[in-house]
Every structure is written in structure tokens, then in C-alpha cells.
Amino acid sequence: MLNKKVAQALNEQINREMYSAYLYMSMSAHANNIGLKGFANWFMSQYHEEMFHAMKMYEYVLRQGARVKLLAVAEPPAEYASPLDMFTKTLEHERYITASLNTLMDLAIKEKDHATKIFLEWYITEQVEEEDNDNDIITELTLIGDNPHALLMLDREFATRAVTVPTDFSKGVEAAAKAAGE
Ligand code: FEO
Image 1 (cartoon, helix red, strand yellow):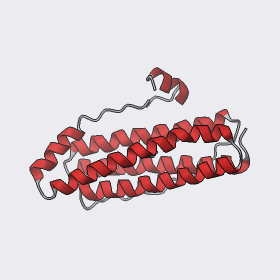
Image 2 (image 1 turned 180 degrees about the horizontal axis):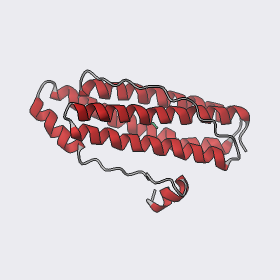
Image 3 (image 1 turned 135 degrees about the vertical axis):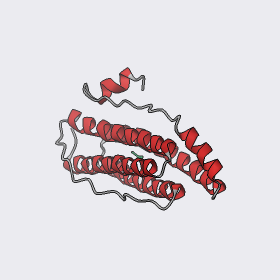
Image 4 (image 1 turned 120 degrees about the vertical axis):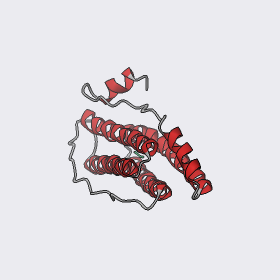
């Protein structure tokens, strides 16, 4: 059972996760357009992670017997100045997501909603990893500077990133996560 405030805040967070997916899908398309197929793969893997985050929350709201209210997803930018610009914007966005999850956690604590608090812990832990990865990549891209050879080496490395989250939600997120050994 979710109270109205918590249900509304979770619905708003589903929207933020959907926007995250949309943003990384846009970055993937841009990377493809400028010939960085490995970067395109990296961002498409990130898109799948975000869809998993959104679907996991969607299913939680339903399982708690509350209403899912899907909100409009904003249009992400289509153009980026450089690979470094894409990752700088990625980190900026992830910091915003971390802050929104912290606010959501504060609300769950205030409303004494222990189930939601436990549920959100997974997301907050995940954010530490996401921000850490983005920081590492920004450092690498800063070191690479204008060196095209080094950039192509990183592009090749990014081409190997595999999707590790479930992508088939036809039987629900929980079932998909179990099947994927999550
Ligand atoms: Fe779902 Fe990248 O936070």
C-alpha cells in the first residue's frame, strides 16, 4: 500500500528514468552519426539500463496496488559538441537523478514507508556506480584530448560493452530479473 504522495513521487521518478533512456538513445544516435559505433553501443546499453530502472519502478507501483500515471517524456538534445560533451552531460544528468532519488528516499522516510525505502536502496546504490563510471570516462576523454587514435581505441573498447540487465519484460520485471540471474 502506497500513500498518494509516495505514489505520485514514484510516478515522477518513472518519468525521469524514461527520460534518461530517451537521452541515452539520442546520444547513441548522435554517436552513430559521427562514426563512433562503440560509443553508440555504450549509450544503447545505457538506454537498456534506464528502461530496466523505469520498468522495475513501474512494476513496484503496480504491485503495491497504486496507480501508474505515465507523464510526457521531454525531448532530449540531438546534437553534442564532442564525446567529452556527451559524458559531461551524462554525469550532470546522473547527478540530477541521484538528487531526485535522495528526495524520494527522504519522502519515504518521512511517510514511514519502509517497503519503498528498502526498494529505493537498490537505486541509490546503483547511482554510486553510474557516477563513478562517468567520472572515469570523463578522465579518460580529458586525457585523450584531440588524439583521434586514442579516441578510436576507446571506441573499440566501448563496442564490447554488453547489456547486463533484462530487456524482455513480457512476463514482468521480476521474472526477467530472475531469469537473467539478477
Ligand atoms: Fe536510472 Fe542512470 O539512473
